[in-house]
Amino acid sequence: YENLEQLDEAIRAFNREINGKVHTSSGKIPALVLDEERFLFSPLPATPYVAAYGVMRKVEANMGIVRYRRCGYSVDPDLRGSTVYVREVGDEVVIGLAHQMRHITLLSYAA
Image (cartoon, rainbow, N blue to C red; front, side):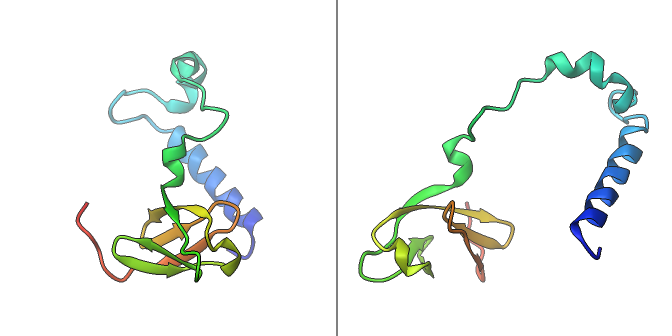
């Protein structure tokens, strides 16, 4: 895709396609039953659950390093001494909220 608008339109087209087909489990077409079933859905919370951010870790005060799963990850030096959130997304370790740093993980760990 050359831009976000093209990607967005491709996603919308895919959603229209799959939501217009008979679902294999329910035998219904999702696009046709959404209004009937919408009352069954709970609204999303106004703020995300804290656990969605990841686990809290303290950035070392003397250098911009945060420790996670026996590894040290560099972060913005301005974050020294502060607490950040660390989580794994695919093969990346994502650190922070407003200041997000991404690191590719080289090793997999058993959960």
